[in-house]
Length: 136
Image (cartoon, rainbow, N blue to C red; front, side, top):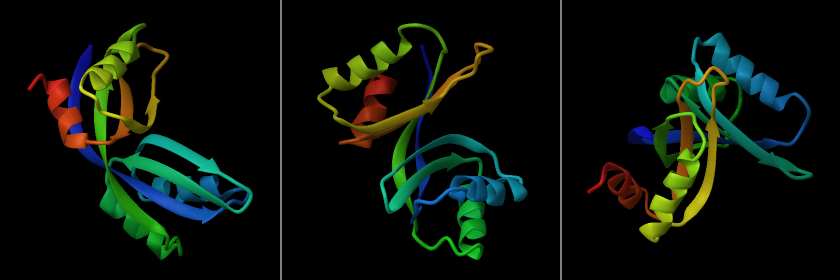
């Protein structure tokens, strides 16, 4: 069910919430040949936060800073590669609950062709989450 689990980093960009900002961020990253592996975001009337896991976070951050995106930081996350089939998320979330690990937030990607899914987790204790998935 869980194919791979590892610690990782996500880029968090805080921006004014306006039309086209995600398109611009996506363009900047793509223009540098960097793949976005997972993406999430939220916004309110004034600001938005965009979370990205990329194939090369350092280059992505550098490219975004050159385009005047200055409110950027990286957060520690757990990257879980899963089989893309029913019940897998139930197993993942039950494992965290069983170990008394709180999910702060979660987002992910799937593939309609049945390829693996990538789930990005920020938890109350990422190190314990890693050990729980690795069976330690």
